[in-house]
Length: 59
Image 1 (cartoon, rainbow, N blue to C red):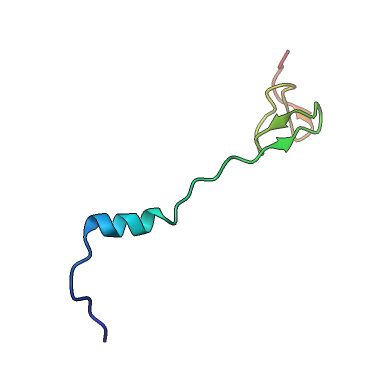
Image 2 (spheres, rainbow, N blue to C red):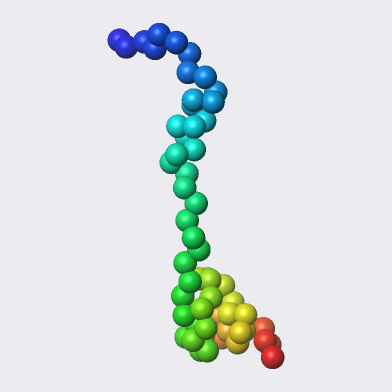
């Protein structure tokens, strides 16, 4: 069975783990009511609609 010769340092271990967790830009979708860009699964800030229902009065 393979056994490491030296203990992996915390810095080496954390550098290896950090390379897999890249941050992604948030994706934007078009609001079906006012056609403004908005974050998905959120109320549109321009018109106040979410899933074709007016949730807040944006005006």
